[in-house]
Structure formats: structure tokens, C-alpha cells
Image (cartoon, rainbow, N blue to C red; front, side, top):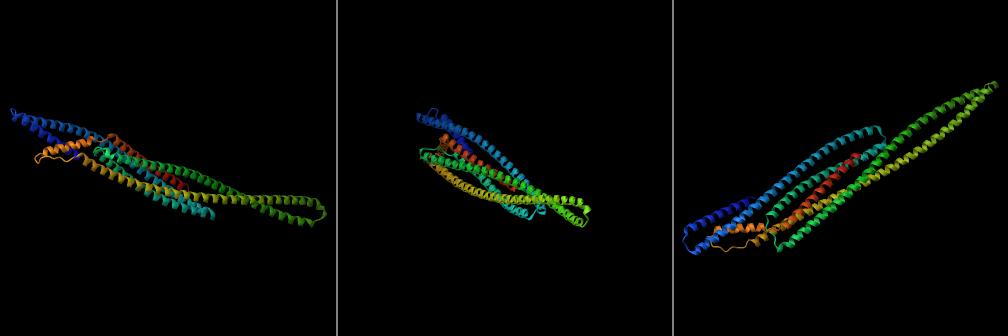
Length: 430
């Protein structure tokens, strides 16, 4: 902008000098020759052409100022959204810390009241949780680095837009270069679209795994409650059997004592025999109940072992999915490196185009040593012609393609954040 203002000021000074010369020549050569009048008319025509070019340059400066204001406004909006995202991330981290403390307290209470098998399972789950936490921290650091790189890419794209606006017009020699640039931008857009589709697929698979893990946890809770009920019922039945055995022994002793009495007590003996028979049948029934309960207990234990194996297989599958997520992250990093290299190549091509266009549109002038003002005026006119020769359609197409690439970048960042939230929810469930 400062260079343009300096050029505008220089053009105004040249215009004033030509106007002063024209006025001086008209007063000094009022009765002169026709050749002097012809020279004055040529100078006045040049001054009028310079004034027209200055007006065109002012109009272009006004349009560029409006575009700069629009870009500043868009940059402020992006900064505000970035600050909002950072604040949400901080709240998420505090919430995760609270969940982690609550989980530790729950583990301590469970260790004090559970069996050794459940304690061993809890230790394995704690190990898996620590691994997931470490992976979460590494993902967060990589996401921060990706956000910083994205900001640098945005600044570089803005600088490239400014260079494209201030660059000179394109010619037939650069049509092939522009087509190659458009094809490269389309290829990068297709790669980004493919990456977004892959991330969406991974998100759906993670949701399916999450539902399976919830079902496994529910089945485990149901089995634990059922085992507790069976153990309580078994203890009650064992107590009842022990009491029946004790009563049976006492009655057998009583019957043996009654056998030593006289025949007058035969009726009482019959009654005792009937009670003895009833007690034996009751004993057999209780033994059958105990046997059925033991079979049920063994069946529930087998079901618990099967559920544990299924749960471990689900955890292994989840670890495999996490490894695939890491692979996808490495692929996205490689794609970002490709974007950086392509961005550098685009910048080099634009610089090469600028140098060629500057060499093609500013031809050397064979002027006399005393015509410095004429040289400056011609250079200003050439610069204004270079700015007016810009192919607006092609530059607008390049601008739209760069905006689409930026939108694809933002969508990829949003997908990565969604994957991070899903991983945090899985860790909370574990």
C-alpha cells in the first residue's frame, strides 16, 4: 500500500509539472511558430492520459481497501472462533480431571469390597485407562501443532491472495501454468474429501464399538447381581440343611431312646416313625434343591467366564481401532506435509509468473538523459496498465479454489476434534 501511495504521489507531481509547462509554453509562445504549438498539444495530451491513469489507479486502490477491510473482518471472526474452541477445550479438560478423580475413588471403594478376580480385572482396566490417557495427551499435542500449522497456512494464503491481486495481468504464455495450478488444487481438494470420508467411517465404527462396550458392561453388572443373589440363596439353604440335619439327629436319638420303653408306647413309636419318614423325605428334597442350585451356580460361573472373554476381545478390538486411528492421524500429517510442499511450489510459481510478467510488460525506453520526468510518467503508466491487464475471471477462480481448500482444512480439524471427544467418552466408560 505504501508503494502504491508513493506512485500515486509521484504521478500527481508529474501531472502538475506538465500542467505548469503547458501554461508557460502557451504564454511565452502566444505569437510563436506552429511547431511549438504542436509540442504543447502533445504534452497536454500526455498530461490528460496521465490524469486518466491516476483516476483508474485511485479506483483500484479503493477496491483493494474494501477487500482488505473484508479480509480483516474475516480474520477477526476466525480468531474469535479459535478462542472459543480453546475455552471449550479447557472446560473439557477440567471436566475430564473431575471424572478421573471420581473414577479413582470408585476404584478404591471397589478394591475394598470386591473379590480377587474383580480386583485383577479392575487393575487391567486401570492399565488400559492409563494407556488411553497417554494417547489422549499425545493427540491433544498433535492437534495443537496442527492448529498452529493451520494458522500459518491461513496467513500464507492471505499473503498469496494479496500478491495475486497486486500482480500483473496474465498472458497466453502463462495459460498452461494456471491450468496446472487449478489441477493441483483440485487434486488436493479430492484428497481432503477422501480423508473426511475416512474419518466419518472411523467415527461410525467407534460409535458401534461404544454401544458394544456399554452392552458388555450391562451384562457384567447383571451377572454380578445374579451371582450375589445365588450366593445368598445358597447360604440360606445351607443353613436350613444344617438345621434340618441337627433336628434329624436329635429325633433319631429320641427314637432310639423310645425303643427301650414298653409296648404301651407303640402308638407314640408309630407317630415318631412317621415323623422320621417325613424328615427323611424332606432331607432328600433339600439335597436335590442344593444340587440344582450348585448346577445353576456352575452355569452362572461359566457364563461369567464367557462374558469376561467377550469383554477382553472387545477391549482388544478397541485397541486395534485406536491403532487404526493413529495410522489415520499419521496419514493426515503426511497429507499436511504434502500441502505444505504444494503451497511452497505454488508460491514459487507465482513469483516466477510475476517476474516474467514484469519483464514482458515493461519494455526498455530509449529516452534522452534530460527527460527524467517523462521516464517516471511512462513507468507509472506502465504499472497502471499492468494492474489493469489482470484476468479477473481466472484470479477469481484461483481465489475460490483457495477458499475451498481452507474450508476442507477446517472440516478436517472439526472431524479430528469429534474423534477426540469420542475417545474421551470411551475412556470415561472404561
